[in-house]
Every structure is written in C-alpha cells, then in structure tokens.
Figure 1 (tube, rainbow, N blue to C red):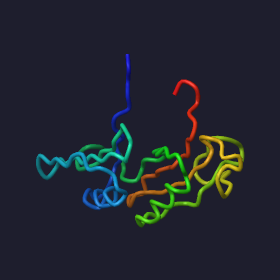
Figure 2 (cartoon, one colour; figure 1 turned 135 degrees about the horizontal axis):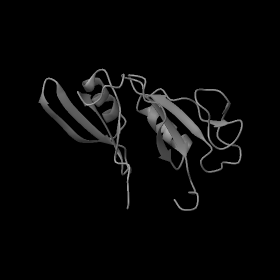
Figure 3 (cartoon, rainbow, N blue to C red; figure 1 turned 90 degrees about the horizontal axis):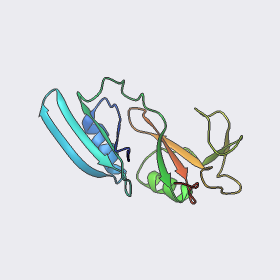
Figure 4 (spheres, rainbow, N blue to C red; figure 1 turned 60 degrees about the horizontal axis):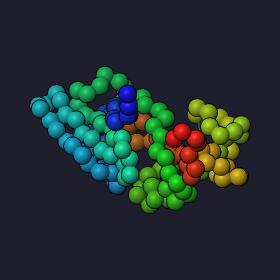
Length: 147
C-alpha cells in the first residue's frame, strides 16, 4: 500500500502574520477556510512540492513555534538561500556537519560553507518562521538508491 506524506501541521500564533510570511516565500496558497471565530485552516505548498503545510485557528494544540526540522529539499543550496534572502527571510549561512552527511540538532557540529566535496545530502541552511518554527534547506543533487 502506498502512503504519502501530504501535510505537515505548523503551529502559529497569528494566522494572518503566518499567511503573509509564507506568501512572501512565494509558496502557493491552496486554501483559507474558516467556519467561525474558533476554526480556520490555511494551506500553502512550496514550489515543486507534492506536500503542503497547514496552520490556523483550532487545528492543533501544539505550542506555536514548537516544530523543528521541516526540510525543504533544493538542488542548489546557495541559490535557494539567496532567493530566500532576496525575499526578506533571515537565513543562516550555508553549513555542513563536521561528522558527516546529516547535521545534528541545534548548531553543534556546524562547519561554515557547503560540504567541501559537494556531496548530495550534505549541505544545509536554516531559517525560522515568525513564530520560530524551524526550517532546514538541504541540498540534494543525486538521490540515494530506491528514492
């Protein structure tokens, strides 16, 4: 049976502020539905992504800003970072991990610059939305077998 990740829930404080932020990223607004003061759901999809995010009022009990490690896969980490910066987003410098391909939580083990060998899966940059939900850009140019 196929199972596809369709939606990630992003808890936010101010729905309209979050809507403005994700719109400024150039993401497609798929839905903005409200059934009253206590329920509203907004859905955005990043360019080229089959999965979307939702946020809103009454859609989660998670604390705003509590989500970490939402990954956006890009083919050119430096170009993706530059585009986000041009859109007004505060993005970390490109980094790689001192110990290998995947980076650790927080900033421990971060080495400035892209992976020296420019290996796929090994270069990153990060940013947060206005509530502090954490996003990671990861450069993938060649997929692992089976992907």
